Image (tube, rainbow, N blue to C red; front, side, top):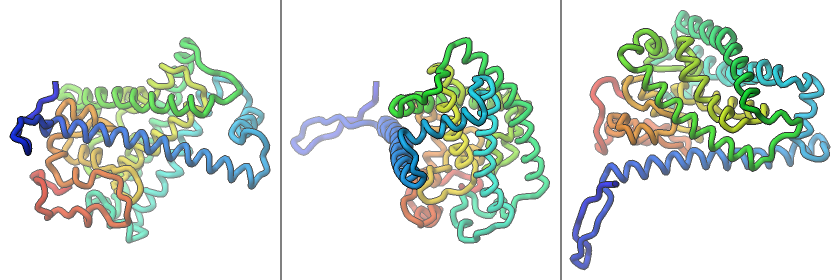
Length: 345
């Protein structure tokens, strides 16, 4: 049951109000729903807008996206194994590095200079150490090819055993939206518990410590991890949704792309305007034993975000809808709230 506190109302009657813990839970649920809802709305808006403008520009007839999918099948064939294994690898590699390289250029050149105002941890990785960057790039490629491809092969056979949508017709737009919501929820559960497990003292030093070499992460460190951790904590939670739902390969590609964009942002070290907040996961890298999840709901339920909520970082943990950097909007010396001892967040 949710704890409540009693106080006297205007008419002298006892009124029950939610406790701070209950209020925090409601706040976190609202944020989680906002993330899911805003992602869905943006996806719907982009889909409708892109469909209209692309159809108008190219003069495509019928369903634009189905037409594009038909072109992919005509070019690469409709072999389910090829599409699921190698198609997924190509899509994930392209999305990861097309965005990751932009962040990496920012981290190595410190340009454009004005974006440094949006650093979550100012003064770190300005610029990033070359030897650490090279090591990260090499290890990420190892995980993408020597771990990722075998995982994709295993995923294909699991999906084939379960049975999944192999139709040349794309699933309906509304069904894709439903699948994405389920995938988000299943990933949250899978990632939170697997991630927290790798922080157990018997596992941390052998596996997860590698990822935490970056106390101030950069975008491409998202899958800089021990291969076992990469399988259990990065790949498997993402695969849970498509496996449970028997998703079409096109939905898998879309879902994988969204998760890559999300984790690149979470590790980027930049809290940019109109982007989801990376504050929680950046705080995790800074303090190690806080903020294990993606949405934050399970962290609140298990009490693994108490220090984060007591820090100034939590005040900045929102999507900034203006060009004012979060650290300027919510400076460290602001009297509101408590500051966690140690390195400033």
